[in-house]
Amino acid sequence: MNWESLEAFIAMGGYGLYVWGSYAVTFALVALEVVLLVLRGRGIVAQLARIGAPRRRS
Image (tube, rainbow, N blue to C red; front, side, top):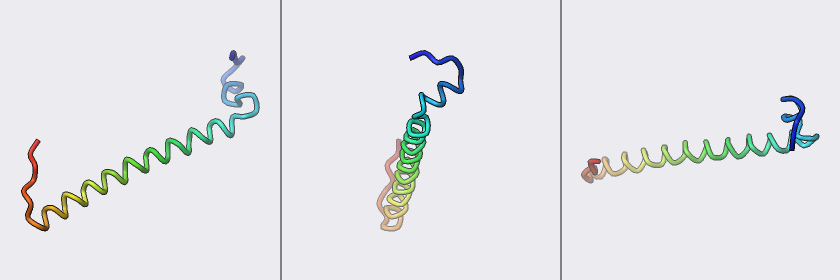
């Protein structure tokens, strides 16, 4: 597909809201997953520290 301008590319033939909206939702969910994984990892490390398990060195 060829677009005449940046505005035409963003509009995506009238479907831009759905296309860019789906990209935004996907990006937000992936970012949320990364944040939750980091928090879960920190929680596991803290829990292991509380019970006295030795930390693994990398």
